[in-house]
Every structure is written in C-alpha cells, then in structure tokens.
Image (tube, rainbow, N blue to C red):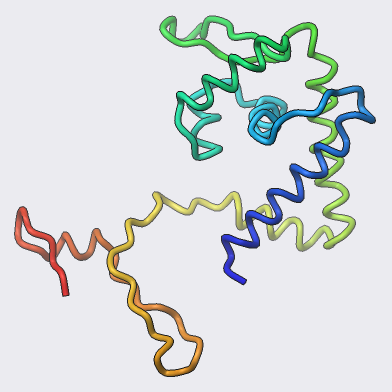
Length: 174
C-alpha cells in the first residue's frame, strides 16, 4: 500500500472518530469539510489562509465553509488586530463550550492512539510528521523500473535539477 493511501486512511480514522464523538459530547454532526475546519480552529488556528493551507484547499473554499459555520453560529469572524484588511476566526460565545469539547476530543483521540500503538510509536509518528519536509518537490518525469520484475524505487528526475541544467527558456526532456 502506498504511503499516501495509508495517510488518508488514518486521517479518515480521526475524522470518523470525531464524528462518532460529537453527539455524545452535545454536538451536532458536521460535514467532513466542516469537521476539518473546526478541528483546525479547535487546535488553535485562527487565520483562514492557514486553515486553507493546512487542508490543501483554496482560500475561497475555506471562506465558503467559514460562512456556513458562521451561519450556524459556531464561529465568528473578527477584525485581525495585526492586519486590518483581514479577519480571524474564533469560536462564537454560543459555541465556546462545544469548541472546547472538540479540542478535548482530539486530545482524547491522540491518547487513545498512543494506547493502541504505543507511546514510543506515537512520539516517532509525531516527530516524523512535524519534521521540516521543505517545499513540496516538483517531480519531473518518473520512469517505471518494474520491468525487471522486482519492486524497486522509481527513478525520479527532479524538475529543479532538470531546469538548472537546461538552457535558459528550455526544459530538458529525455
């Protein structure tokens, strides 16, 4: 199984567990997108642009979800004291207790995960995920090496390497 598939399955494990914990904690069900946004806010993120970046979606998509959550009175958008042109997100007074419950749910899920896989594995997982990975690579052509019948690493030509050796205005193709 590819790592991306495993990461997605684990992300959905957290989201599914959150959904199952909402009602017993006095919360209404949320759409997956709303749950991910509420999760970001519960963990302290207050800028829409950062939430969009965290979730890998457009700022416009997050704005739409924030408007839905504001209409439901879960959040409020307030003037950003450091930038008068933008607004920050926070749980509304009407949703403050529920927002705190969301944060407790996430903490409980991490505790449960540590119980299931072990604290050492959880620490290593967190360490690997929080490590600086740098900018996402711009992959060039990826060749298939499976012709040998063995499972080996694909050969990857990084675009920055390709463009660094190409003539100005040209890209190198093989």
